[in-house]
Length: 223
Image 1 (cartoon, rainbow, N blue to C red):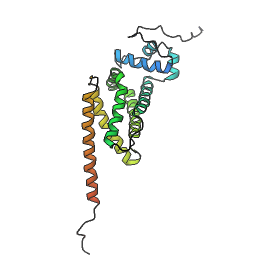
Image 2 (image 1 turned 60 degrees about the vertical axis):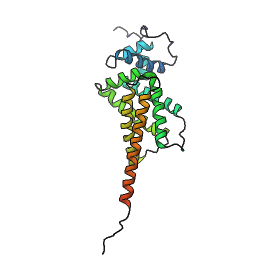
Image 3 (image 1 turned 60 degrees about the horizontal axis):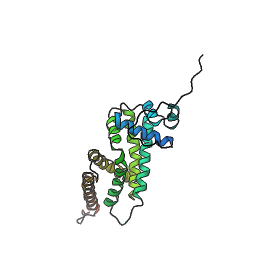
Image 4 (image 1 turned 180 degrees about the vertical axis):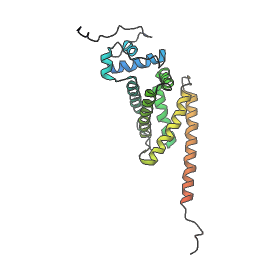
């Protein structure tokens, strides 16, 4: 029986730009994932294409990531980390709206350099259930970190309501961001501000409604 040949690094393929590859293999792999997705779309982003672009062997890639979806989850974790570093510690003197605005924009600032790849992955996930489920799970973790960065507690049933509310708001903002190619992201910021103000108004209405329902009746029924 012929001996199995040891996996070799694929020959490097031409990449856009002449920037040197990062020395860290994990960083190289995720950067390659984003480049390939941006250049050819998610459906054509294969593991061997990623390995070739990163100048890694498939065995090296597999040792770090079990699948493309795992690489997407790793990328989102990196975005969470950079977002938290940019957002810093929230100021309790600021309103909840201002704190959330700062956190969401910090995240979008980090994502801006990867817009093409992010859009390609989001579009591709519509036809890829595994990627869609991975994005859903990773997004939930990201929302939790975003609320934490804004100094907003999110435990229990009340916390779940906050998570769902932020999820809907962020999805709306992300849709606008994906089409906003301006340097200052003016359209995105304006949309985010409007959505936060609407959410704030809704919360105030609900709080007033709860207070009214909780007040004792002025004309209690006679015995």
